Length: 355
Image (cartoon, rainbow, N blue to C red; front, side, top):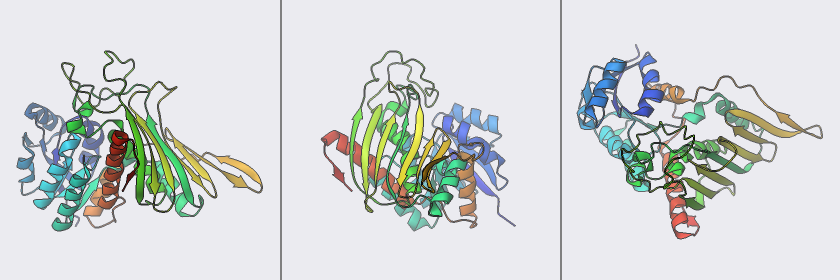
């Protein structure tokens, strides 16, 4: 009989409420037995809302529970590695929201703790589980793209600064702006499609042009995070651009913004292959190639887009239960943090950074 796994959640904010709570509650092999938030009243409210029997304000109290099998981390970025390492050292499996960590050193600490513990550690890569993404990966693995030698990816918002003045816009807590918030999603997706090549160098630039704006129209993503009651802090970028080179000669252009004067918001991955190309934009997939001497455009119908969060959490359960191999690894996570950190370093110095 399959063991029912008991989950302790750390962080009762927005990402738990809209992306983790229902998949955790609805999975037949999971039971949430505790939730923690630095704001105890928020933890208690979430516990009451979701039928969770215990609420705490200190994550160590959740990790110390003998019956907890999995720690699910839904906190601001700064605390991901600290909590993950503590949980792994206590013999718990860990699922963590992206990004893996705010520095390469912290990502490596997580890897070391995982390897020493023998437990499973996985960081959210929900976009790999979207129906179009799954279709593209199967299609590429069948050889239809040919050599993926160049690409572009990004997530550019016209207006969408999350929690202005709160932890999202405070570098100490978040590690950066849209590059670390949004970049993880689509850099990862592009690299996964490309076969996870190793990054060897990056060049980047960052800009902060909306921090001092008193009122930003149409900031539809401001519901994420918590705004400051006063002016708060805004010491991260609102736009990042860059260029990544890989060990196989391939390259990837990137652009991520919370606010830009553009026509409309877009999240996308484009790849140039020797047999065909793809564009995955705002959930719509296009394949562009050639057949019998004419160019062809194909737009597969891949089904309703779920966002992938629940599917990734379910995959993690399969991994813990021994039914599946992990779709994403901690080494891929370390490479991601190396890329993001190097782009920030390149933006600061104005020079290419070797990895």
